[in-house]
Length: 358
Image (cartoon, rainbow, N blue to C red):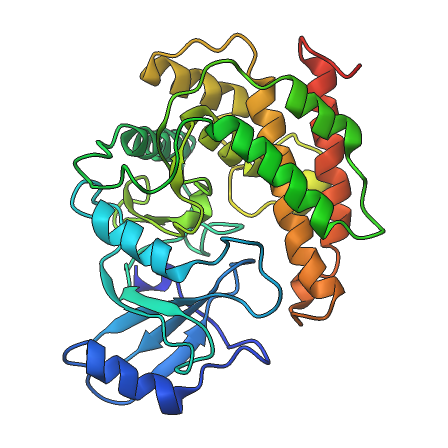
């Protein structure tokens, strides 16, 4: 079953690590590193750069910020490290943190190192050789949702995370913040989005519940047990985690969820195997979550539109770096088309809701 384990690939040109300064730092801060190191890079991430460092006796994961212009507060490696370190005792799916470096002289930016979780990461497709039955696919969905629900029920005081963010007023801050980020990163070839922005601003829910939210909870940010791929053993990529509204967290997840009968553009941009037989639909996910959390949401449209618009803003921020030649990753070349598509999806959900576009 080792062939199913998630593996890193070749390092992208221009994104190499300066081993002459990194290796001495690693030996100084992490015990018992034996032998030479082999460095590989994960290709799936569109935000922070993630590397696998293989020594003779153990494997480490290094996370660092990307090059180029960064949105205010984004790519804060120290925050991501401290959050996971505090969360680990009360949420076992968090990887074990090993060391954090704020000295930008080591590799050119801050970074942190953690233990590698050995398991399956369900990226665009399951690994060759792994085919889940319809029942197993459904079980994986419900187990993933149960992990998200468990996160939303974490006692933030016990985890000493009550000071992680402001909390109250989260909904308005998110809408204001993502609208501003989208507009600042907008290039000439994407929509202005004025109608969607106005709709979000005018339809914010009156109530919100504050809990710990992941804000990038997707199948391809989960690590599955190689012996039973329906079981979750790890949750990765905590860059966007904060104290926020759990329904907005679910809306973020739904923005990535592509169903088997979704359109061509959705299938072309799919990043996780949510299309296989047995996977829950977006409506079923909403119903399952709301039932388990005992919440009544008459119209989920606001949270769906928020998730789609936020994803459009993230895609546009990434495309902005490519457009201005701050990254060479060819995967970002056509992100502007994806932004168009996501804004179209926003308008489609709005029109189908009880509070359509004016």
